[in-house]
Image 1 (cartoon, rainbow, N blue to C red):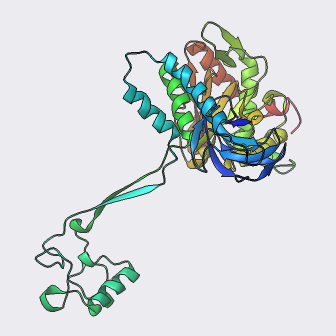
Image 2: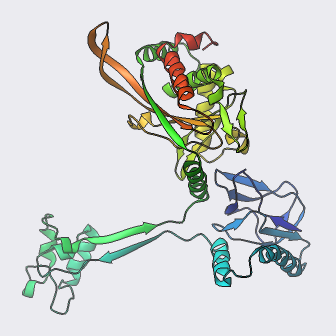
Image 3: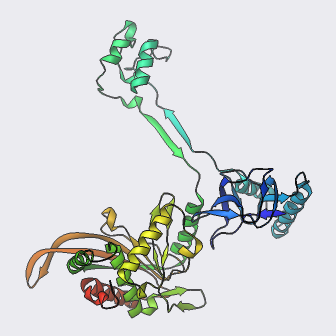
Length: 422
């Protein structure tokens, strides 16, 4: 029986086998862990759904293959699997040939197929050395003039011999030159041009595709507002003295955004081409930076949860995201998204809408600035937020009303506490 590359997420088009747990010849039982597969969002364990002996592995570790391609073949020990493999590959190739116009160049098709089947390339670094200058310790034939001992010492100390003026015969670099070297001027000619290339990860491919589609298909517009955070900071300090878990500013922003969405339900919508979906439930996506890019786990029914519940979930989901242990149920179904870069010292930015949401909120850091209160200039703490809106489903006035509601909740956090216990 053929085991196909499974579709493990709604946006997955191909997968990478990060680790095989069974080798060819091993006995496999239903429920056994067969492989770990890297999708565009997480690395997930893939269990076998049938019994048998592993006769064939379609790809090796680190390789990518499209969804529904041959991942493995299970059967009886010693069974000839080649006819089954040939028949399946022939069946997969036939629809592609029929769909391709006769005028298309076959070379282009072949190249495309080769790219899909190619193994993930290893990281490589290319270095181009600049030519030596006249001041450097080289002979007339371009070879470096240095004693073997001097070369060995320079290598141990990480010293570029081209930066040292030799004191030996004919400018030859010797042991004492290395021992007496104190750094000094490095000539431009000794510098090197270099770069590093790495293969694009499944996650980065999906980020490029989905955000490209969002940016170039959805007409974005942006609304920015400053919010006074003094009362919010005092409330957080008081809450954290009695709360079961520590509450972050991001947790409070999520709670306030959920309340503002309930006041402005048309913001909590999705553009579906021939119709607009207004969601009655509020599922807030929380952008989390990970090594390969960005994941958006979802806080479900955020408006009905207490601050402590939200804080517990954000910590749990954030940890899972960084360890690439999120499951599909953790990242699907967002109706609104928040991206917070305040912890990095960013004051203001704009975010690309996380399709199919109509809006995304970009949150900057809290900074101390002069503010006017009761006719007096006093120190105050403000936070700048920017709402990116899809103009197909949300107009400027709607976006502005949402930000007014958000501002009201954050500047008067007692209103949030009246909506549920801490």
